[in-house]
Image (cartoon, rainbow, N blue to C red; front, side, top):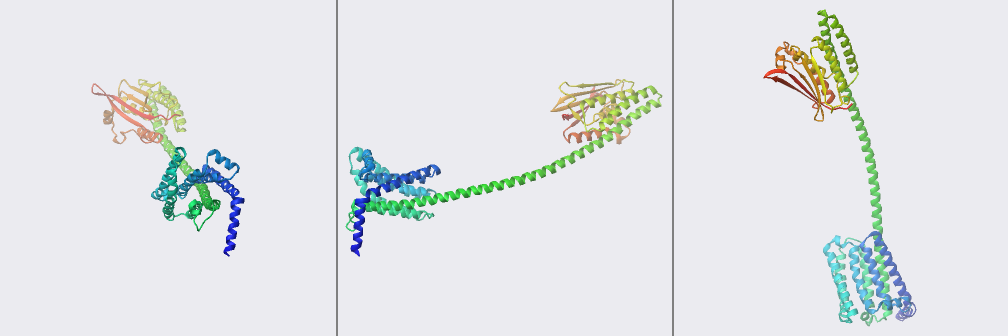
Length: 491
């Protein structure tokens, strides 16, 4: 049995050393070049440092064994670039060190434990720096002692590093670590067999080419393990990416549904608010109409009393003239009752007609004037119909009716983003008018109450202001000034 096994091994040795060694080397180097290129492309696609490190790892592995080519273009490349046994030893050290840096990045040791990451990577960085320095001294200083000593010490040092790193690696919660450990152990063992003093041990005793063949086998197994681990990680990343995209799409759909739901709710709320505003506006208009319906009979009652006065006094000519002007203002009142608002120009025109009627009672002795600031366009300002009439009525009834030189001035000016309407009379003043009024219940004009209500409904509470100022001359009452401040509502 032993003779048969030894015979088979002898045949395999002959095939490898004489017939297939160079073909096997070319196959391994071609595979390494393919892995280098493929994982470099994956790095540019995914920007994962693990792919770049593995690409470097396979590249330096390829460089290490190019000098072993016997004939062909690889031998020419080796000669041209000066690749020899020294570069083989140097590149072997480099790719063995890169192995640790690669799996530390691949398994994300830094995130697991930064201290473990330093223990795994820092010693190999030092080994790579020492190898590079001693190799350069050998190459350019023609002094190979340092590099020779380093080569001998590298194997025990890297063995210790493998033991320490793998002991930490076993504590990492990632099943892909077993592929990394298996591939690393296989490559380390097969590379040891390829070392000169190891393969010549009596119980091994194989040629260099056989040692290289064993190493190539380790390279194949190790790269299969690493490639599977990287491919599986790529699959996990792709699956996570697809899941993330699916979750994102699902969230987008949920957001769209939520957006539609919120839009529908907002539409419903807007409809309710619009209906509410519509109802409030209708209520406001109804209130205004009620107030207008109160002020119109009030004004008509006062005008009819004046006509009655002239008829009783047998002043038929004046009564007829009064009736003519009264019919004009009645038409104005009827037209105003159909509107929610008048322009300031229309309101002041109505006041002029009203004063003309009232002036008949005083034999046209009342001096009435209206002054409008050029900054104000009375056709662009709106207010409730006949809202200023009660203020003029109050000025006539309680102010100038008993004085000889009767004057009422109306002045419109801009103020505080609105307008200020000043109604000034030269009557007896409010204090004396209050004392002279025999009926305390009606001391405040009903017309003024109605005017307040109309302004409140039209502009809103607090949007307008009415001030009463008692005027004095030589410490004697000299009339009353009423200032009505309104916001501008453009028609």
